[in-house]
Image (cartoon, rainbow, N blue to C red):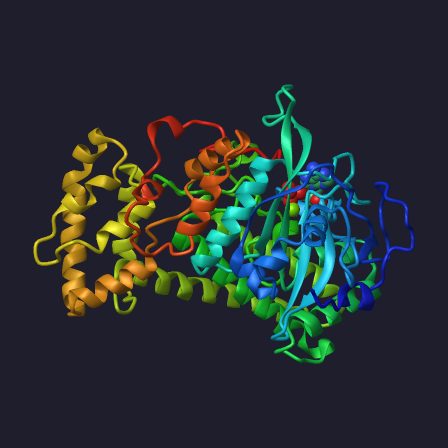
Length: 517
Ligand code: AMP
Ligand code: MG
C-alpha cells in the first residue's frame, strides 16, 4: 500500500553492529534497529491531511497491518527500521553523540505524485542511542507533539508533520519535575512525517570526530536528496547550500515570532536542516506578551531559549553548523557571508510579517518605533499577544478607542493603569494607517489572515491531555479540527480562542513544562 525507496540507508554507511545496546557509533550515519512491540496499541487520532499526502485513505488507515506498523509491532513490505546518528550542542555546550534515542525511522515513502517523506516513530523503544533512557514517550507529550505539528502547519509555519497518535496500552515511568516523584503514565507513539529528519547535529558529530570523509558523504547526500533544486557541485556549492539553510532558518524564526511560539529547547540537535520546526518538547505559546518568557522549567534560570532570544540562538546554532562544515572547504569565509544573509533575511522577513500583522501595506522605516513602543506596552500591561493582534483589526481608525482591545488584558488594574498609554499609541497607529489610505475591508482581510484567532494555547493542550488520560479523546479531535482553520471565526468554538484562565497561570503543563516526556 506504500511505496518505499530508502535512500538514507541505501546511500549512506550504516553501523555493522546489530546489537541494540547503548554505545558510541563511529563511521556510520545510522544503526539498524527494530521497534519494540507493545501489548495493546490503539489509534487515538490521525491527521487526514498527512494520510492523504501519503495516499492513505480512511480504509487504509483502519487496516490492522498499518496500525501494527504505527505502533512498532511490525513492518510493512518495503520498510526498513533504523535510528540515525547525530550529536549536538545542548544549552551552549558540546554534548557529543546523541542520536535517535527514541525515534525509529521506517524508511522513505514516495507518494503517487512522486513526493518523498520519511516516516519516524517517536517512542517506539530503545535504540543504540538511548543512553540510559527507555526509548519511550508518554501520552501527554505525544498529544502535544501530534496537535502542535498539525496546528503549526495550518498556521503556515514550516514543520514536521504527524500522521498518527497511538496509545500503547503500556505505562511509562517519568519523574516529571525531576524531584524524586516518579509516576507511571500512559505511553504513546507518534508517527512523524517529513521530507527529511536531518538535523544540524548530524553534521556536527562527524566534524567533531574528525570523520571528514563521512561528513563529505553526508553533505553530498543531503544536497542531492533534500535540496535537488540546488543541483550543485558540492565542492563549490557548499556555501550556496549553507546560505540556503541560513535563509530557511531565518524564515522559520520569523514565523515563530509572528505567531508567538517558543520552542523551548533550541539545541543544535533540534534544528532541522530543512528549516522545519522539529522536536516538540517543552514548547509553549506566548499568552501575555513577555519577551523573556520560556516554557521550559530547565531553562527558567538562564532563559537561553526564551521567546525574544530565539532568532539570536538560531544564528548561534547556524554558526555551530558553519564550524562543522568549515572542515570541507578551503574558503570558510564564504560560510561567514552566508551568516550575514541570515541577519538580512530575518530582519526583512520580520518587518514584512509585522507589517501584515499591523495591517500596513508596506513596512516604513519609522514603523520600528511604533512596533517597539507597542511591544514594551504589551509587556508592561500584560496584554495577550494573540487576542490583541486579532482584535486590533476591528479598530475604527477614524475614532480610535481602546474598547475593542479590553478583552486582551489579563488584569483590570493594568488595563486601567495603561489605558492612557494605549490610547496614545492607538492614535499614532491610526494616523499611520490613514496615511496608507486603504479601504478598511481590505485591511481587515489582510490582518485577519496574518493574525490567527486560534492557536494551541498551552492550557488547551493540557485540557485535552487531562481528558485523554481519563479515556476521553474528543477534545483532541475537536482541537485538531478547529486548528485546521486558525484564521477563520468559527462560531461555537469561542472556548478555544479564550485567553488563559486564571487557574492555568502557574499550573504544570500550562505555563511550565519539563523536558521529561
Ligand atoms: P531532546 O531533548 O528531546 O531533543 O533529546 C535529546 C536526546 O535525548 C536525543 O538524543 C533523544 O533521542 C534522547 N532522548 C530523549 N528522551 C529519551 C528517551 N525517553 N529514551 C531515549 N532517548 C531519549
Ligand atoms: Mg531532540
